[in-house]
Image (cartoon, rainbow, N blue to C red; front, side, top):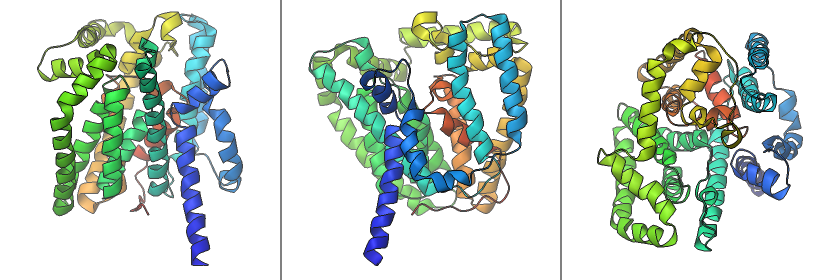
Length: 399
């Protein structure tokens, strides 16, 4: 009987991990676009089997009443976008799809406190594992001399990476801390982008910083684990650099050289570009007074990479400065309320959402996949929903 219950619990966990692996990672795009040859990424299609498995739980899902005015505002933004017609209709609808999933997720999770932190941890583990799987696959292509810019860069779910790191540290899950560090190293060396490093560092630093207030011994243990792995990486950095330089000069340039330049205070071309765009944004902030609806995120066909690189500009265009300012003020009001709840009542769940809020704010100046990609935006909406929920947060402990 006990064995049967154990296997049932293990099967449930594996299904949740599989959902993160296949649905909420870039693997969903690979399957639907490269294998099934569909014209766009459809993680929704891969979610259908899990929808059937969880049909009883899905039936009990209810929406917060905020969905009424949020959906109305969503329709207004689409109408404004189509009326101004600054971008093609297909591009507008493609971008709005991600926001729609974010809106739905927000309305499901806002105000509800029966969310299992353990399930979030498992699905985040699966999501980051899927990203590592795709990233390593691209890296193998490099080893076989399929060395193109497209094969070097792999964009994944930065939100689940942050959740994996934060939950592991805040809830003292040491084995997941080690797993998160391993995943972080893999992504740092094979994804072709530095953003996983930034998200990992912010999430780990804030988690350990706040943990020192209540769990000094546990935090020191976590720091020792991180330091030990960091030391191993330090003594391995030269062989790693030589290997990357030999296998992929482009990957070496994107990861090693640019990171060294940034740490030494020398900005690379892309960093200088970012700096110029931010300065230009603030100098032209008067042009973003009124909402203009959704933008295009099709960077290749519409040449609009600025919105993907700097989501703060996208949100300013979409909402207008005044609405965006109101949103940011309310956002940080709730984030700091969560920090206060953690300091006063040691509520770990409040700390989790506060750190997630800081990470998402940092991403406003780094990249916008978490506002657009359909395999990420449900998590973005979930975090927003939990940030705007303060009542009766429970002390959920991962199993």
